[in-house]
Image (tube, rainbow, N blue to C red; front, top):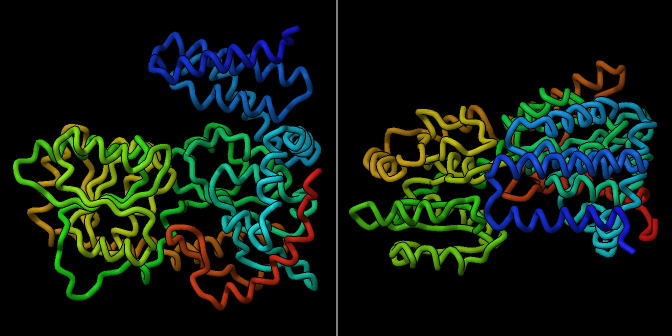
Length: 452
């Protein structure tokens, strides 16, 4: 016999499959989807499943692009949930419900089977920035990157106990604040990197339930890794550092190259994400420009810097970004950038007369020709050294944590370690890595058992 839960799930799966096939821009379908997710959230609440309710309300708010009644009601419910995050009894209900889900069990199994210390660091994406001091009770600091790992963190750790010893700094990879993973941090002291304008607008909409800090993942670039190299002759006219997903808009670049009268040399640096390189090559061939591109895949940061130094102009054409590290890597390598003006989630203040130009959909070809014709007009590294980089960002984070700790009457005598994104998170110095290694042993005490 078909249960109500199974019935709704089958309707939703069928509808989402149809939406993905093309008609997702229809206002009518947007309304239908919004009401479907809102109804599922309401039913989850009635069944005593608060995490599932938050998940559905997030989808109704995030995926519906028009201001429908269902989206308004979903956001009202989300605001109530997120505003209660500092109430332990409410947060524990959401966390307890999450831990009952199949997804939570799958995450726990995936990470706990890893050898130490990969199980503790969630395969290198959780980084201790400061140790807990058992003598004074001064809290330590943990950095957690990538949105999907916010849920993994609670799956793997007994976070109800761990929060007594640490602040947590969240570095989101997705600009949307409507993420059920955030609802699991009730009772925690959280600093959320909110340099992304979409994150900031989401916080204003749902309330400042975390302590915001105007930084994003791109602000942690290492200027010693990405820097000008002496005596490098330019080989490539353009470089584009982006995974192979459609969001990065390689096809737009290829169509533009086909319209520019003279052939250009282009370096594409990327990695598989949603698509493989063969799909990108096929698009280039279809546009008749495959002979103009050279592809580099999964290369180390030093090689990325070398290619930047061999290139005249960097391209960022994404439709949306959580924090584009490649843009700042180009800046520190002193390479100007051409950036898509309508990239959702990009803080456009970093694209200015020193660093590059913003372009609309019809302007890319003209912008490429113009920027290539005046390479000495820009000074991106000088701007980046003043406004970004791992040293500047560490100072901002440390100042904020010190301010918040002292406002609560708590000690703050030791600063956080300097971390850098190259492109994944790591310590700037090996000395900090050695000094903070004992924190991993402390964290290991709070791992859940595989069956919990």
